[in-house]
Length: 234
Image 1 (tube, rainbow, N blue to C red):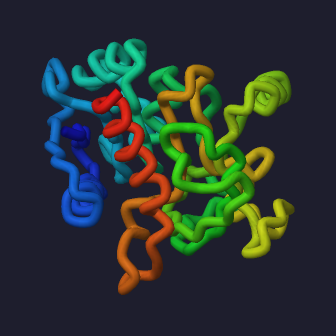
Image 2: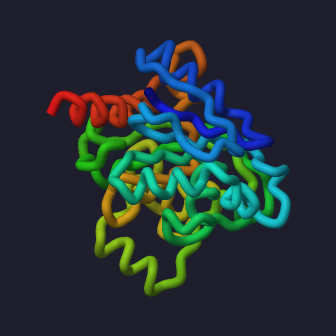
Image 3: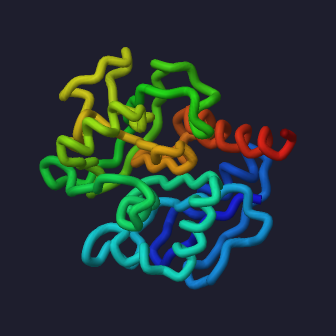
């Protein structure tokens, strides 16, 4: 069972459940942010996009104090897989489960568009359905999605191979023209050092059906499903 955490202001929680259950065939459950603990049978935890607490103070700054986040941390510290998309990425950074921060987009405009992503690592539980260098097309929709890390931290992320996804052109070229929001080093998604927690600004749950623009989101969510199933059968 996959746990989808629901904060006040979440608006992609049911889209995430649709992708998991109707497309990928795995059961899921909504977990309210005031719950003290995750379900005992949770195999993965997903923090969806939206506007938790109305994005007051900073995106994710208040959600990090929700009671459920203590158990999300426990789950992650025990090696459980955690995936945060958009606002979920922001919450994970604010909670200290991922390094860095998400700032206002370059130009201060909200962006809603399809972007291309280059897979930098295919050896994580979230990208194992891809090949290194593969280009995915997945939508973004955010106002505070510019990833920031000071130079020493950015260098450490690169050295530790924690950058998993970068914004790129359709041909996989990474340059300023393919950076939609001003993210440092075109970073679209990172993992923690252990590799079991990922945050990404794009929305894979909105790219799982051909009729709504493509299925590349299945690469990321399907990789997580495969990883969980593989662990269960090991």
